[in-house]
Image: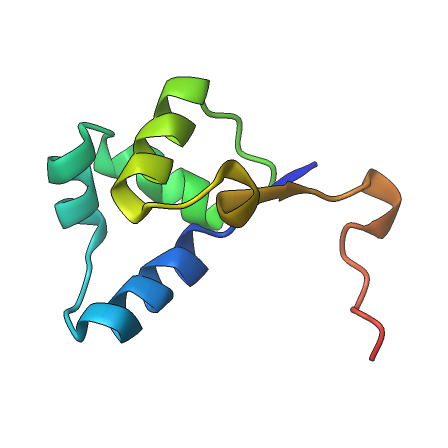
Length: 82
């Protein structure tokens, strides 16, 4: 499964800039619909296009690895080990 870090990227951007960042603002600036952004941020395993991934990487100035990661299916839902 692919895990997106959109909420974490939004929080990091807010911390860096001191400005609240909304899905509406990201939608306006990237051309990605708010519904798609909402699904990326909240729906486990959401499938989106590489074009959307590219737009988000440009928007946040990040790499694909900072935006998303692969989590093996057998580890989905497990608590991280500390």
